Image 1 (cartoon, rainbow, N blue to C red):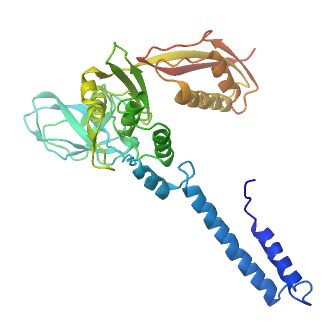
Image 2 (image 1 turned 180 degrees about the vertical axis):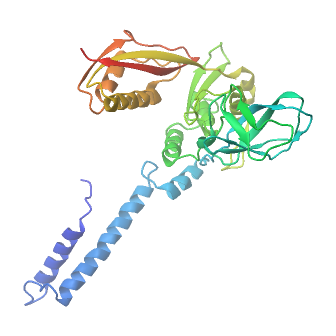
Image 3 (image 1 turned 120 degrees about the vertical axis):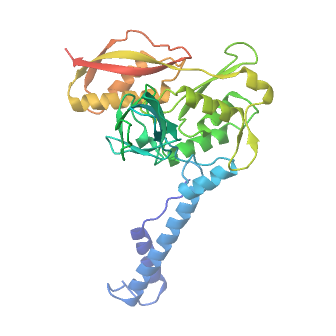
Length: 364
């Protein structure tokens, strides 16, 4: 039978009853008597002790530990919290003379994010590419392709504005949350390293800053080959760029575990058969007749469907119509709906990352 922690009121009543029954000729304790005051003080102290014991009990388990104890437990498995990473990008700017754009020159976006130029750039007359990195780490510095940036301080002979290239500004990730770290530690605890098993590749990939989900495909091109796909849910575009794929490939191949200082990575003989696949966006058009068809209910349905994709929507993972209907029915405010399209289960390939494009109609 599980132990139930007594409330403060229960402790006060219990201790007061003990005093009244064990002392001779006391009767019922008076409201402002010394004994009644002592009973309340002692009950409060014991209640605090129960609370501390309850807190300590929570710290014994990864699923309930708080930040400090969670990090301590993680370190014993050689796992450290992922630090925030800095967003990077490339933008083009026009120069009218040959001059220098100095390393460290500051540029900013319309939203107030500040970036610095990575290296000195000797301009050519015409268009020039400028590589830059965010001043502050985190996902807030990520931004879309083709946005306009501007120099904080003007440079003679160089245009005041820059246009971000088609890759956008990406790579920024926030410091890992407790929930994410907890999930990785539990995954590691349930699946011990096996020198290159499927879950080892997932562990290695998710250790890299910004990587949130990963999938493994053993023998995708025959015996001795392994493919991996991953996404970065904190980015505006969750599909990784070529630069990010290269960085994760290098990390999985060989890296130093910051908790142990030891070299880790895939077996040396497996590196030639390892590949990270390039994912493409697989847009699934949902047409939903909804009642009531209000903005509030539409938002609720969209939120539930986004959560469903996070749980079940990966490459080569079948999305079942029954699950989609169940997800829509679980949205707050939804009374009834009819899924018009698609009309059958959806089965992306292992290079396709599903996403939803939703059209709402009135339920007739």
